[in-house]
Length: 313
Length: 177
Image 1 (cartoon, chains in turn blue, orange):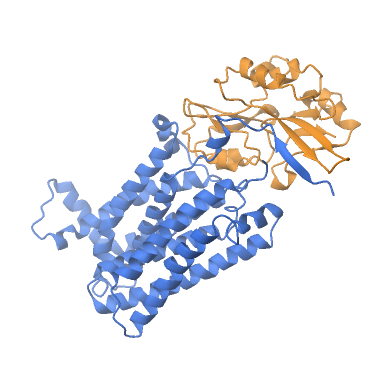
Image 2 (spheres, helix red, strand yellow):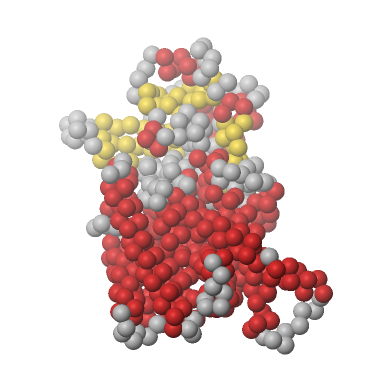
């Protein structure tokens, strides 16, 4: 067999190292976007099924984190751009084939929507709050009367936002680790899990925590299932995909992935949540922090590892 | 009309004249380049083979860089040539991630830059700069739809390959082997 011994010549010091074009900003955005999508999805879901009274943290107080997370996430996306003064070009066109175009437009809609959602609950948190302008009052009244319909729209947008964090990566044919259809749902489920965990930490009601705990447990199980699926799909794929999977099954990301993402970020918090559900007293902060750190590390690893999987060179 | 390039790996000596010609013609910033030469050594002694290839954007038919571009800065013009409009590019890097040939790079001014098949020369009826200067005349450029073009003639009588065809992008740089 003719085996390639070496390929040389592609040594362009000003280009090759920078083909690794995405740095820390992208995983942080993916984390914040997933978190916001998770919180908004469940706020909308419990509004639609009429549980505002029982699930106050989910429907109301948790969403106060969302505008901040989205604005910070947008800032991260902006910082990542290399031709920043032209960022407005995103909003002069809609391109169906480009996930980034979808994402930009969804963010453009869901960010103001999250501000409205939070503003409409502000008076419940701070009863003496007065809006400076009359039109804000009437806008928020409109939000309150149409909350159910808004929740439906928000739920759909939250799903797109959550999936988008994964599709952003999976749309790249040239990066075999990313290029699989399960990555979108996987990132959505992971984002929802971080969102639910955060709200669970904020909730003061025991029954709400129990419901959120079971939802989070379910999401973690689905996430583990998707991850298994992803690796099975890659192991059954072409050579570049097998090499991509091997980064996690013996290669350079094995330890960080299995220890920080799978064991500490998913399995261990899941065990703690099961213990909590069957009646043991577990400080809620422990599983929540593990899930959040695990989610963040997962995104850093996926973005880093994806960029070293290539077809050539 | 479909522009393509054929490169004779048996004639290429790896002199990098094509690289310098491109940098000069297109005012590529110092330290950057739109095309490059690779050397592949394969086999085991005493049956060792060496292959020299000058590589660049493949101007793919199924171009992932054009599809993933959120602003439409990456686009395809007449002849299947993939171009970038700097004033529309936001420098998000999506096209750099999407290219299996790593043919795109971030220009120091922020936008993404790449081989244009010297579109400005081709529309005047000239050859791309790299093809025009090649001292061994190992590069053939032309219209694939025209059976008498340089590139069609080059591909007629020789075995050829494309790089990473498994990436499924329908590349249009062919290597005569």
